[in-house]
Image 1 (cartoon, one colour):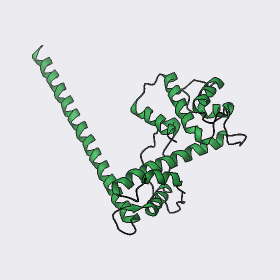
Image 2 (cartoon, rainbow, N blue to C red):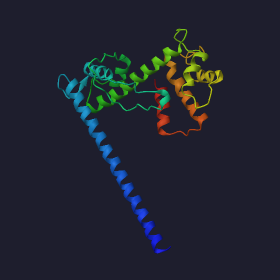
Image 3 (cartoon, rainbow, N blue to C red):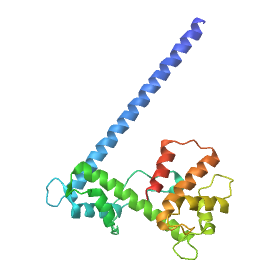
Image 4 (spheres, one colour):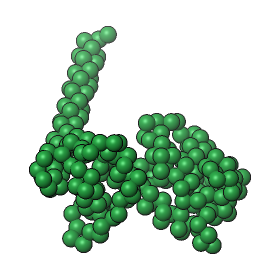
Length: 231
């Protein structure tokens, strides 16, 4: 290799090393900022909702936390056909936030037989409850729009328009597609999809749509489908 070419090659490798180093440093700095933000959020929540200053949250205190924080989310966390693009929990302070009732079953799961939650437990539990609540609200809106005859069930024809929103470009959803999805998600055997079955139905369709589009499974697409299945 000529001296000039060799020098150029060395310079390129050096530049790539410098770039990789800067990229790693930026990623590490961002990770540290996220950790600091999480720790600050934990501290803020405990300061605000730990009424008896015990260092833990009892059931009533935790419900107050989730109710108030959930009411301040500006946008739904889950967009089933957007691959969870809004998964990050970023509450916005609004003066006219409305209280959102938290299902008792969610609180039971959060406490898992415990009387109180410490800061780490409360933060993790709140994230799960908030994700579920906002995800389900998004699905409720979608369900209501698709349920044309308002019988609280989606037929294959009604489901078709909803699934079309998540279809690959240029692909037309068929009734056979809808019937396949219903067969996979229909728990009560009525050949329709009710509100409780909509999450699994969408998860099934997302998997099928990704395969039709030739999209390989990634942690992101897998997380989107998993979230719908858990609803």
